[in-house]
Length: 638
Image 1 (cartoon, helix red, strand yellow):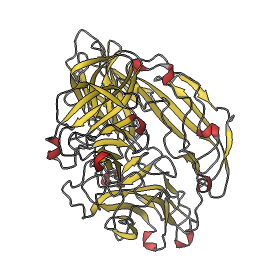
Image 2 (cartoon, one colour):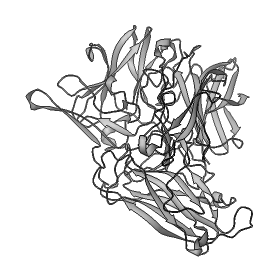
Image 3 (spheres, rainbow, N blue to C red):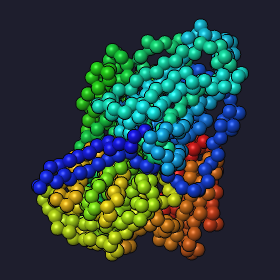
Image 4 (cartoon, rainbow, N blue to C red):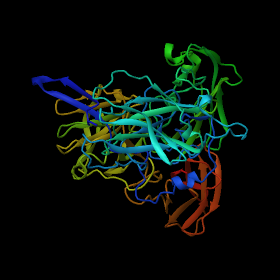
């Protein structure tokens, strides 16, 4: 692996000086960080003792919007990262990404030299019965043309594997209890340009030693262990009879990416700043037909629900919005206007702190795979602005002492700026970055970029959380700052010669809101994406959701912590410093916003059984006298 710069921008300025901005692969994965909290056991021994899987076997990681881990229905380990953001033009929503990070999102070996590749991620199937069919009436043999196929892409929005890195497929012989490598692919040292195509792998299973109960297969990669690098993205894994190398057709029309946010300007924003003008007028969808040479008729619809799953608005229901979708290989994404950019003739209302809305997108059609025809978005209104989607495919940096970054935000009403949430990559050069400094800034609007400075705060060091799923550290201004309605530029300056790397979302392009200055004036960013700097607002009498995540999370008269995270069969919630004169309850919600459990708090630690719930993302809400005062996100992973 070669740690290379993925993108470098040089702008010629006076006196022959170059101003530069860069992005590169991150050292860790913010979507998997959860620190030293004990991990729920997910051992291969537990899974192997379960009932064997059968063929046909199919996996497309459609559950990626809800869980970053492989489903225990098919897999016995969870080191690969299931996601919707790293692949370019994926065949369907969700891929499994192989890199140099473990299941916690940390490097396998932070000290690994960049020129050395070693074993990294592994994705192992549950035992599969290749001896008889599910009805036990037919015995499989090589004449059944049993084979395994999958699609893969190198790099995507990640980092290109070098010629020392590889992706490998192994098959397991149950009687001999041995693994055998049957296919491998090396990376290369040349960055592929505009290579957005997934390539197909096909392996025929003809050795009779595989045709027993207990057969397994696994994909694994070799990479540097020093960070999120050497990326391979895998999708559409199939194991079935009567499969051939020439089979290139997938009878499937589905979503490739998550739709873009329904807000016009932001991914998230403070609830009290929302006005009807903040609503977008259309969605942006990415729908593809994976058939080769076959036009497919599809009906697209969406529905918007409140947090208690009350239907607020719908579009395209009743098969009234059908259209012919051309094959992706010839025409690209679905170009039917009412599918690609459906109108959004609705305005959200009744906003309060921690309000959220659910948006379901669905395709109605007849094809081989129906499970990936619905995807769900969640729009949360808390107390901060965000352009990004919460996932950092890259990190953004400058190599100049004193470099500044400013992000444009517009306030609709007077509010109090209190903090910035910033994701600094914790792994590049380790302690050297921890001993570096930065300052938070606020600039007025200069018309075509930042204007005069209106706040220059004290220098502080980056911090790194030891807990929390998908959490950004929060840095508080020395004193809160009241800002009236209008446009402001909010950001930071690195007060060090060591580059400070900030998380960068490659999927939502808000570069026109981002300006930087390395000593020669402000320049608009030219790198597609969004910088993960979130300004936090709130009046003194309004609870700041997520306040002070650097230590204990306190809200009003108490705080909560959930563990383990990810959880398996039980979840423990601690709630302390509660006023014994008030009534407190805990509520458990699914990703779709449905309430699953409500319990009264009688002790500082509450235990909730998770045996009835599947793997995925869930939420816990603490209520004080029936008013929400704290929220926590956690994962069930089995």
